[in-house]
Structure formats: structure tokens, C-alpha cells
Length: 464
Image (cartoon, rainbow, N blue to C red):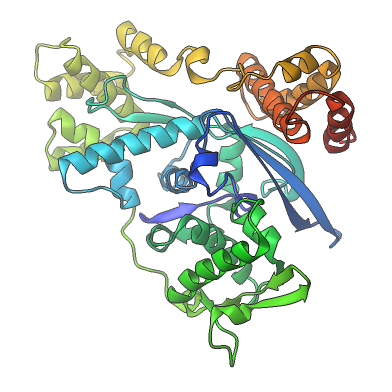
């Protein structure tokens, strides 16, 4: 894997993770539900569902950071669930660093905000393809956690901790589904999603299946289902025009415009089919290998390039990461009187010989940075007061809530989350699922909500 690559789980390209509408997606307490189709091992077509709960909201632009960071993590010589790098290194590898200081500050804030949103995501699906096991499964997992220096001006590395289940899935596909970030960045969010879906399809065939236009536009690309079919058609044509310009798709023989990709099935019902473009026949763009993320913190300590090369060869990456962070934290807290270079070199040699361990003050600092108050990161309180729902969840809907929460909790525990974390995440996700459906079915009041909601939850979860 090279710099400039992205990596996306196969099922993630089958459906939208959040609405394209920024107003809807960035609202706190987002619960995004979609459906998608897949073929099971017996060649039968099945419909599956996915729910993305995002307490801090989610932007379609966040997918660039998610897929880019995943690729950078797996590009390391010995990738693990924990990945550390400075924000400047990450953005430089993703190709989105600006030269001006003011623009860089904006990029760092955007990156930090995106990581915060992604850290809150809980993903559920009853038809997720697990490449590690080679089958579609009922899953629930988070994406990642993080530990960032409290001071935005700190030169220390950021730490990302991938969810274990999600990381195993990504490891299983790292050699089979990577994409070019340069092309991806040039596209609009909707075109990015269609690009990834078509790359998956065009890997094995020259023409896509005939997609139902509305299903593709709403469930896969993320346009609002409240839009009229005519409006969805126009938006999809603009997306197709973007892909045609990049030669990701090609027009059928004799066709003169992307309009001819769409055929009418019946009144208000349309199908769209895409043909493989010349983009996929080109030699892959040459790209430099991903440089070590340790170069930035080692350079901040004051080591020269030749010394950095030598220590990268001499010591294990985990050891260098740990002691470079200790050194930079000690400098920022004015804990050392010797030169940072001498402090670092002395302690990394001692640590390599197992003659020293990280200081207690640094362990406490890391703990404080990573274990934030759960109430600051996520809240189970509704963002909009809904007395009818709160009454329902305490009485008639209590059993449905407990059943859903238990299933999610078990899935999160299996994915590696601690019991307290899994219980918080499961409770939040179950509440968001029920509240969203409750408000959708009964916007005015609770009325007959318990019956219809209980039936919905039984159909969705009860028989699985």
C-alpha cells in the first residue's frame, strides 16, 4: 500500500454512512438507516439493513479521513490497532495540507472535528460482509477511539485506536480493495460514493447491474428520500457526468450523453446502468511508499535526518513512539534540563535494554487524555424533549428497548469493547433507533406508538 491510497470495507461502499445533506447529517444524535441488497452463498438475493448511530453527527467528508487513516495504519511495517502520528503527517499523506499557516490551522481543526465525530459512531447491520469469515453476518461495532493532546498547539503525535473487530475486517481486505485518494478527493461526496461502488463492481465485470434509480440515489449515495424522483434523477445525472469526466464510466456505444444511461421502467420508476471506463485500464498511478510517521516527532525533538534514519533501523517503532511522546511531553511541561535529543537517546537505549520504564507522570497524562468523562463525549439524553417517547421507554417499550440493547451490547463486547463502554454505546444506539422510528411514526404524540414500534422492532430484530 502506498501514500495516496484509501481503503474501505466492502459493505460500506454498498450504502451511505450518513446523509449528503450537511444540515441533517451534522445534527447531534444522528441515526441513519439504509437498506442494501446482496447475494448470499446460495446465489439468492437478500435485502439487509444498516443503522449508523452518530451522537456528534457525521459528515460525508469524514469518509475521506476514515478511509485514508485506515490505509495509512495498514501501510505500516507491523500494523496494529493503535496508530500514532502527528496531524501534519496524516494530512500530508492524505494530500490535504495547505502551505499557509492560517489554512493549516483550519485543516487541523477540521481533522480534529472529523475524528471526534467518527469516534462516536456505532455501526449495525444484519447483512455485513465479513471477509475474515467469508460470509454475511449480523454485526455491531464502533470505528475508533482517540487520544489527542489537550493543547492544540502541541507537537506531540495523535493516537488513534481502532475497534478490534473493525480492524480485523480492514486487515482482511487491505490487498483487495484500495483506491486512489487523488481521484477520490477530486469528486463530490456523492460521486465519491458511486466511484467506490463501481470500482468494486468493475473489478469483476465491465457493466454494472441495472440499479433502481431511487434506491441508488437514496440508500447508496445518501440523497434525501423526500426528494421527488425528478430531482433525484437530475442529481444522479450530475454525479454521472463527474464520473464520465474522470473516465470512471463510459457511455454505451452510440450514446451521446449520460441521460441515455437511464431507462424508464414504469411511471415514476427508473433504472440506471453504468459501463466500465478507461480509468480502470490505466496503469496504477505511481506513488511513493508511506514514510514513517515517526519522522515528525523525532524531528521535533531535534534529531537530524541521518540520526532519524539510524534510530528507525535500530529500535522498534513502538519504543520510538513511546519515548518520543514522553520526550515531547517533558519538553512542553518543562520537566527536563538536558537537551531533548540527549534525553531521548539516553532513555530509548535504556528502554531497549529493559533498564527503564515510562515515568508515572506520563502514564497519568495519557490516562487523562484518553479516558475523558463519558458525559463529555456522549450523552443518552434526548437532544429534543420528547415526553411521549420517554414515557414509552420506561413502560410499554421497556422490553423492546432491553431486547435491542442486549443484542447490540453482546455484539460490541464480542468486538473487543469493555463492558462499561459497550453498555453505554448499546444503550445510546438502542435509544436512538427507537426514538427515530417513534418520531417518524408519531410526530404529534405517543398515541398508538407502543404497538407499531413494538411490531417494528420485532420484525427488525426479534427473529434474528
